[in-house]
Image (cartoon, rainbow, N blue to C red):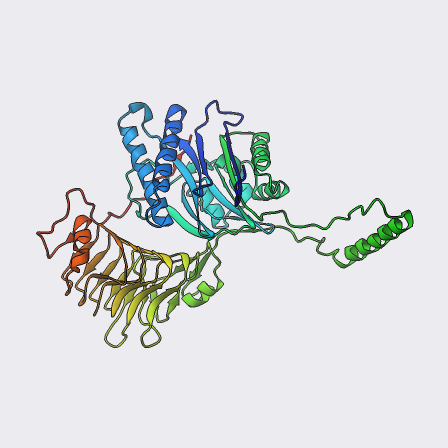
Amino acid sequence: MVNSKLRYAGNSDPGRVRLNNEDALHVDADRGIFLVVDGIGGQAAGEKAAQIAVDRVRARLERQTGTAEQRVREAIAMANNEILRAARGNPEWEGMACVLTVAVLDNGSAVVGHVGDSRLYQIRRGEIRKITHDHSPVGEREDNHEITEEEAMRHPRRNEVFRDVGSEEHAPYDEGFIEVERIPFDPSSALLLCSDGLSDQVGSLVIRQTVERNAGNPEEAVRQLIGAANAAGGKDNVTVVLVEGAEFAAPAIAEPRSGNSAMSRPVLSALWFAAGLAVAAAGAWFSRSLWIPAPVVLKPETLLVGQGTAYPSIAAALAAARAGDTVEVAAGEYNEQVHLASGVTLRSRVPREAVLRAAPMAGGAAVVADNVTGARFSGFRILAARDLPIPIGILLDNSQVEVDDVEVEGAGIGVEIRGVRSPALRANSIHDCTNEGVLILGESQAWISHNDIRRNKGAGLAARDGARPALAGNVFEKNAVEVPAEMAAAVKEQNLILDAPAAGRRPGTPGAPAAPTAPAAKKKE
């Protein structure tokens, strides 16, 4: 099918071994929603889980309130909890779950939500890149370059996953549950979502070549990919969804043209002779590279920072990182200002053991995001002292960033959010700041969830200049300035104000989330 901006197609096949199809998909190009689901549980249970996931994810994403990242997280969490409730109410469905990958197109980018071992690839300019990480023992080893793609495809444990949708109750921002990333999606690129029925049977090089060979005809590309999976054994259900930008095309290769039939034979012969000389000269000149370089497969990498690693500073690692990479920082104190990068995750290897002590300039912030999208900052401690002051702990300036499990202590302002974009703060501890704990300036609709905000000498949270944050599950205590009257109702509705017991917490409002326990790997069959 073709609309004014996209070319897209999707299909699912039971494969050559299984009688039923536990995969499902959903394609809504008008809203920019593309989804692949792989059910777990066998027979009707897996199919039921997949159908619940499609229905719930679709329902939430079609209700376009909040940022795309918020919608994706909430949609997957809703699906998760509904699958769990259905399984508990029907013994025949016990143990059912699913894995899924969803892409939501949003203003020149794609927000990708992912749990399990289904995949999303990006294909652009002769390259293919796996965006999602496999939440499986074998996939994790492949992502860490411990084994090759071919070895992973042949591994006897390739059908095991340690994250799924439906095995246990989850909230949208639970640690170790939903992987969310925003990536660029321009008209010259394509996105391919698939279940492991494709990726376990067909390598990424063949996937890229098939998509490029059929550029402009996504229906044929999907048909050929499913056929290739079945030709390789068809051991599982296989589902493929392909989305092409309007300008997506295979890398150009110059080909000789026949010319005008009205030309005289001598002129035509001369042209062919000249073309032959040109081709021969080009062949001699480019023989070492064979005209077109070999395709490059880019995979996300983890860059390590700390003593004895390749990167002695956080800044050096961030400068080397590409979108999709993770910068992991060892325990220790780091006296440097950190500038987040779009699409890059920056995390402490051990939560709260990597400490940022001071910003390097007066009036500066320890961590800065300036027009950054798709980044994540996790697990750090930002610690100010009288001799090492920090005017602002984290400054998010017109940036779409997730900040989670971070402690900010003693800064001037704990977290300052500026502009119209809507970052997410979840499960952070912001305390003992000399001014506001969280200050929001501009028309941001920031998501503020399950943070612990205490003993700040200004307001625990202040929203000005048209800011409209969404608040849920936060704890406020002993902040010097009460919540402004215009925000009081929203704060008291779904948050806990410990030094205002009369306001109370509405029954059933969740408190701070408990630390999740990593489940054992689960077989999908």
